[in-house]
Length: 117
Image (cartoon, rainbow, N blue to C red; front, side, top):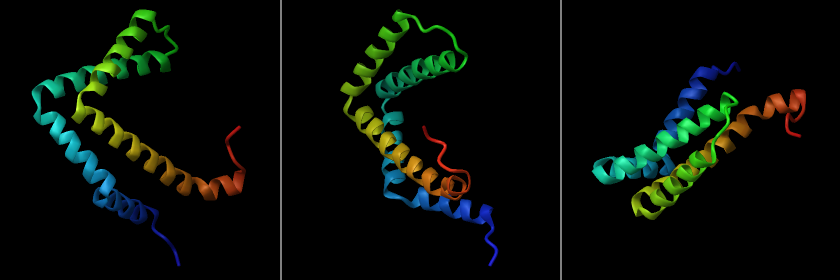
């Protein structure tokens, strides 16, 4: 029996959308966006995070001032209860996606061997 990988991928997408992890993540994301103060804090945090990631990917030096600013931003958003819960939910979703990726990559790992280490 031939498997259509695109169909399987779309089925996985539906599974993610229907999952408790995604439902909780979306609810918290909507809560943060509905609160103007929380949204500004979260957007600022994301901007700082993306800026540092871009610099890192481009091999640019990250200054101590930028590191300090990022640490302050993390501390600030972690103090906001809804943003903190959103970040925890994001982490759980990320772990779930990583587990799914491991499962998906298993045939290639078996074929080529583990790419780790």
